[in-house]
Amino acid sequence: MSSFPARIERALDACWRWLGVGANLALLAIMFGVSADAILRYTLNHPLTGTLEGVELLLVFSVFLSLAGTQAARGHVAVDIVTGRLRGKPRFALQAFTAALGLLLFATVSWATGGMAIRSWQMGEYSAGLIPFPIYPSRFLVALGSLLLSVQLLYELVRAVASLCGASTEPRAEAKPPAEPVA
Image (tube, rainbow, N blue to C red):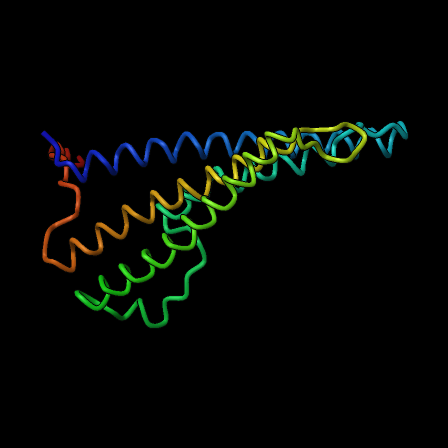
């Protein structure tokens, strides 16, 4: 039976992976939409109506659906001049501090943008353009993406604090079959 932290990490990884697929599909839709618009605009002088508005809304999908997964994969920009040299408790203390700071920031962003999304939905806010797209789904995605990043940061904070206290937070390594010799 696997440990509780390992199960949590697997569940979060699966969630981030599926959200990453959604973000990639949004990027794919943006790519095809902009390409089709450019081709039709310059070859037939007939651009696709609503491409700009659609791309603006899909961009929110692609960015905010992938925030937490990028954090989990350590893909955000980081300066490790000092942190790369730290080991042990000082490193865990710095990880706990930065995770707590990020958690505070993104929990606040999630709360504030969640309120904005609810107000946008209640008043039926739409974009001003040739095709009026509803704005509230994008606002909800900003709040959701920030909330999911907060979940990831909370997980990292718990791991860093547990490491500071001396508890092992590393998932247990699965038993691997021995490698076959190369002939």
